[in-house]
Image (cartoon, rainbow, N blue to C red; front, side):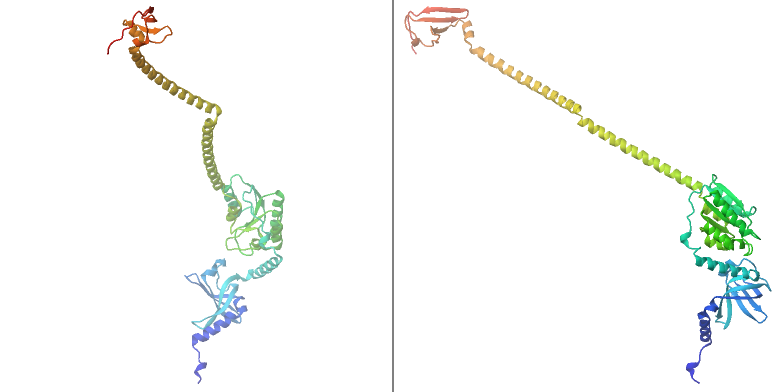
Length: 403
């Protein structure tokens, strides 16, 4: 025996599993059959067998894939299972891992749904470049849905709670059964002609048969060609219809559509109040800054004003004049004191004072003072000035005093 050709069980199972995984058809396969041995595990997983007259295959749907399953499977139910076939390595058995389960009655509708979806996708009806923007502040909201039911009440209640001033234009429409698609199209055209700002088209949840009107081509094209932005709101969060791909915006529920279409005025009014307070504060600050600036300019103008400068110069001159007057008075007082002192000194040596004491001032006829006996001769005429007059005399003798 050549041991190089011996493989472990795990290696064989892994190899077989890789063959299944590499097969595109087995990874994207639809299988029709009847449900048998169906068990809902506490973990959320579903284990069952799919069988027909010729055979059976083990199936499992993990909890993470159950969100699209809107019915409960039971024994003998005819279904179509979409998923992939792979090997469970531990047991060495292959089984179908279900990603989607459709009741047999809905199988043909699902095929038609997929065919129309591919067609419209190829034509570009789903392209983002064709999507219109939802207006931020609509004044008129159009609604196309059934006259009765929770959908219309949810839309109205949510819309008016968010904006009590909103005008809602309601166009009742059949949403399932014969003629429902044509009724929805008429509602879209009517609201478009009425000039609404945005419209919601939808209904509550249901089976694929109940929602089929919103998978019709005429409805999809009416939504695509509508000049008014359209929000689709068909079914519950897990339901998806053709108009969800064509519409300008998809909402998971009618209530969510109203929230997407209508802004909450309480929030907006709060923002406006905040803006008003910010603007008021900014204006107060601006006024305060400008007032301070004006006051500064006033002080500068007062300083630069010619009259003000003249007044300042006049005041300065008055101060200088006052200082000069005080200085002059001080100098005059000092000069007067000096004069008085000198006057007093002069009076002490004044000839007039000497004359008052009995002395006389002797001079010749030319007015020259005689201070010595040697200056005169006998017979010379002399003038004697006394206190109260002049005496004319003649020298009769000259006697010199012996020193």
